[in-house]
Image 1 (spheres, rainbow, N blue to C red):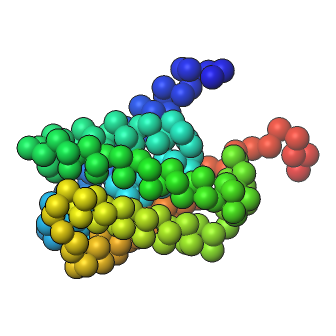
Image 2 (image 1 turned 90 degrees about the vertical axis):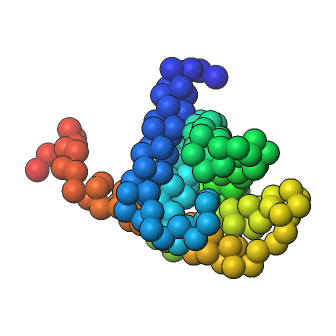
Amino acid sequence: MKNIGLYCAMVMTTIVFFVAMVVLNELIFGSLEFVPGVNWIYLPAGARLLCTLLFAGAGGVGLLIASWLVCFFYIFPNDLVRSSWGAVVAAVAPYGMYRLARRWMGLGQALNNLTASRLLVLSVLYALANAVLHQIGCWLMGRGLHPDRLLILLVGDLLGTLIVLYGAKLVLQLLPARSNPYDLQ
């Protein structure tokens, strides 16, 4: 690893951004919680996909740490197994979709060929993977399968992801354009 400082900065940025999205989601959409950990709109899902797209493995590590902290201290404070599984899924699902995009969509490290349609497909696949993996975890822990939670988790993650991604796009559009030193105009 060439630049450990940069890697640590990406991990920390991911942790801070994810926790900020959890707080913002609670403030804005807290009333849309179906059951603990299942929301009709879940902004942190968008933070997960965005951070893995931007920071790759460092984003995955940051998500694992942040998700475990959020699960253990906030969502499921008395359930170490569920908190651990939730954190692993929260890191594996978006990182898996990032790897899928790199392999089958030809996504480059600079994300220069990430089109709007590819991003939408990636968002849907991520929301589906996350919802299914969480339900598998519930089933493995003996808590049964809950199709209603699966559907709400899928919808909430997809909506949250789209809100965060389009919000990031809007912020980038509002920033002043960087001048090109080679532009002779």
